[in-house]
Image 1 (cartoon, rainbow over the protein chains, first blue to last red):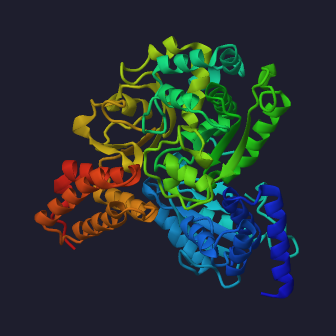
Image 2: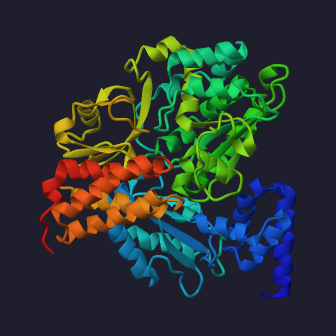
Image 3: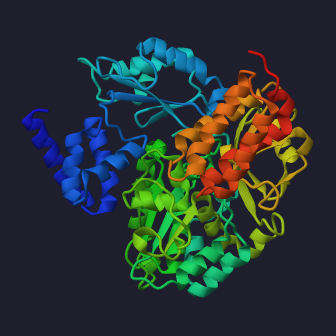
Length: 173
Length: 393
């Protein structure tokens, strides 16, 4: 990590601690901010947070390792989480999973080499009446079929390049 | 905003702010007595009487108290809280404010699961509107000396945080590992202060009860399970979605309404609930018979019940917090047994041993997760034994 990047991270954490607080109950909200901006929570970030909150870095590590939305490894720009629980399973999540793996060329738990997509499983996300369901970052897609997978990925890819919108807009789907 | 098929709900007939104004015109003791009289029980599934909980928190002496709304809806097959928060968020916030007045709290927290991040903007807007109308903030509704505000705290992806003490641990910035009880949260909750933790739906019903009266609520349902319940229906039926029925409805009546007749089994209460076979469809859905937090999953005649059990146990192996041994080590043993059954290499004796292990987990696990995770497996083994055993490779 470059020194300038370290400085940027340090400044960000300081400003989040300013806004959110620096007591223990601010820990998870601060970690969520780091996750949101940097795509993962590095060892360095955990050390800075620990210093800020006056706790041991192991405490921070124990929290990051517990929650499935906090990651040690850099995640892709788009984190796709496919629901694998029974209702979505009965509605055909296996086919959607296979298509996602085929189109992205990675398996679940992996990130594409270009750093654009991460594929993860999720447990029940409360869309049981309209599965199979998946989340792309914060956005939910329901009644996903294998051919809809292609459309969703295309919409994500449009967020890159000269026509980049920064995020997947409603207009794309 | 993602909408679900929704039958007309009582919630859409409740006039805004009426419940809060009624509550603020009452003495605190009378308000809690009204809730107690309705015999409203926790709608998250555990079924603890709301009035009793509030009374204990109101009696506790402390410099700060908290009202927590449990919006960590993670039970497989449950999505009613998502719909309530989408369509009736004000009723929930109103119920929280009533709770704050009842127990003497100034601070409310909504613990919203990470998977529902897309609801946050909508909820923040609803809170901002309430502040602008004087329904939150200093002197709520012009009631001198009653200050109350609500903020949203995002979860980070852990099913166990729906358990109230784990939720509090998470709010405090720790791993979501359930605490020993007692002390209970009404006495020693968030930051060691008295805290009431109620489900999204419970708060909405509180508001409805204040508007329509506890007698109205009590006149529906059964003697031990009063009032109405919102159900999330999914699986093999014609009309999956959200339904409201009085407590005590039979499984068969519910199946008829959702177009699920002909099912071979219904999972009631989610992965931690019970699997009810067709022969028992005359049983009632109520705290005294088959209890549920609202999850109803219908399994059609062609469903492989072993696959269902496999899916549930994979879920629990992943979501166990790992703190106590029966749950941490028991769930993988049950999953292994299911895989043995699937490969046709499980003896009757071994299956029996695993069922006994499940019963041990029910009595020895620390929290509700481990105590209830064997339920689905045990009830599937009990009712579908012949379907599970003697499989070939």
